[in-house]
Every structure is written in C-alpha cells, then in structure tokens.
Length: 170
Image 1 (cartoon, rainbow, N blue to C red):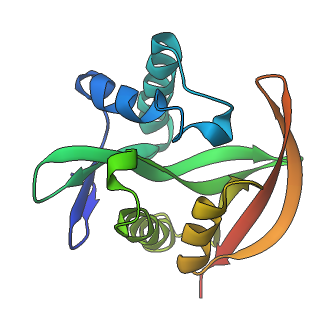
Image 2: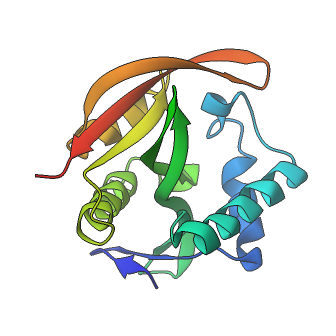
C-alpha cells in the first residue's frame, strides 16, 4: 500500500489488475475524452507504462481500492506529463463508471496532491484535462486547483484542447 484515505487505499497496479483496468479503459462513456475505448493491446500498454513509471519515478497512476469491498474502482496518481515545452507533475484520475458521483475521484485526487507536496516535496502539481471534460475539471477545482493555461494536444488524429489546472504548495 502506498497510502490510504478514509474510504480508499492506493497501491501499485500489476498484471492482475488487467481486467479491472479493461472495465475502465474499454468503457465508451468513460473514455470519451480519449476519443473512445481502448483495445486489449492499448490497455496492456497503459498498464506497462504505469509499471515502468513506478520503476523510474517511484510513482505513477495507482490502483484505487475501495476499502469496504477490496475492489479496484479506479486509478489515480502522479505522472510526469509533457506540457508545451516542458514536463509537469500531474495528478491523473480515471474511475469505473459504476463508482462515479460518489466523491471517490475528489478524495483520491486530494490524497495525491497531499502526497506530491508532503512526500515528493513538489512545489506545484497540475491536472491536464480536455476542454469538454467538465466532470474532471470539477474534480480539479474541488482539489483546490485553478485553471492556468491551455494547449491543444494531438491524439488519435484529433486536435484536443486541454486546460491545465494547477495548485502550488503553501
């Protein structure tokens, strides 16, 4: 376990999480901001990327486990992401749609912000969110972040405007 909150705990993902990850990354509604669901190969590449991040940085997107059931309900964590001409520390989150609108994403994102500031001693953390993804933008706002700037990413052949929400260590 990396850390825990009142209702959740966080751990590194492993190959045993493939099916739970498929339930998230292969759901059309969940993945609309990514222009649609992932294939099995894309899910495996996503999982492999997280495992590589754990080795390189000692962080990545972690499995979010609901304490009450022991079920992986999503992923949330910290990654280094390209932004314009630099790399930034980002809090990312994606949850199984069955667990939306229960406050889990906000609870998880707040815990990751605390981890970034207290454990990693980061001065700033952000969330990079597609302009059409208002639910994730609202999580960022509830996490004490403010919209800082925007950038258009090119992904899956589509121009996708994104906002960067930031929080600075106090």
